[in-house]
Image (tube, rainbow over all chains, first blue to last red; front, side, top):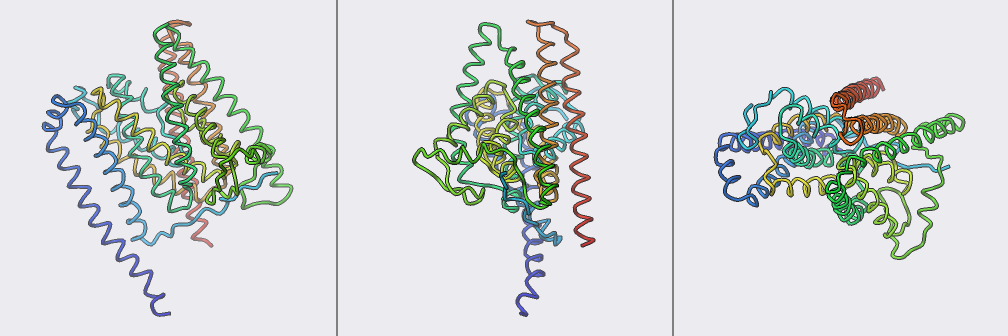
Length: 92
Length: 337
């Protein structure tokens, strides 16, 4: 019972910690890309395949990081993830 | 902001606003938003090939964000999504090959007319079915479930062509793998022919042909969009038509928007999603018709192109506002409970 009572706080604390770490990672990734925009341009002129691989990898990484970050922030704030009620279709 | 690869300067606020609006609509309706972003980026000053490349890459990233949240809500049927990808990829490839061939003979713009016919027909059918379903639900007092009044999914599910597969998340006990691959191939082909708008055809197909609940159709389509947009974005990047900095900037705003759009699906019934969806695809269809009239092979009235873009941008902005209102109302109602 005691464990259950403590669970929401622990979940929120753990989510807040994860959100903090993820936000630092996101800032570092964005900062690195923006501060090395010349290097990115150099890759673009040297090898299109490397540029394509870099762009897809960066997009996927940032998408995943931002997705998990948003998830952690909402958990840390205690917003309950409400599962959809009508996820069952009734055909007539 | 100056974008060195594309060699253009674009106001940051415009990019962020566009990313946010498409994020909200994409998260709520389950489409990528190519019909909206590519022309808008061209108007902002990006060369057309860059607009399409940036659009596809940012759609891939935004769809990852939205899919993560939809998965939390139980809206992603991974098995169905993977099977759909198997049919979609060759369909899109075939469609784009046909368009390249039509471009060579100078009649590719007729695809815009086809796009109008298909999208407006889907919209008309959705409106008709929604009217029947709402009436039925009100008469029977069904408030919580997603009601469909067409027997088409039952007939499709009863086609016994082995191998059969069970889709637990979508609550479909058995359906032929070939049916799923066939439907996704056709929807992929149409997406390839239209150049964008895959989600506009796929989401209604998942609902009305396969019988997937509306919210799961939205989440599963977004999962599929990740793969198709990443593949498209990669091919554009190899041709040198992607500006990474613009993609990453739009992705930040789109992530916020996608959260709002996705979470809103938890506060509305399937009816509301389908209703707004049918309006959005009708407006996209009208926009395609205007672009068809703007084409040099028809009337060549150039300003119709701008009106077409203005129409979809206004619609997306209004619908994003409606979605945000849904979210606020839902959260307030939940707090009151």
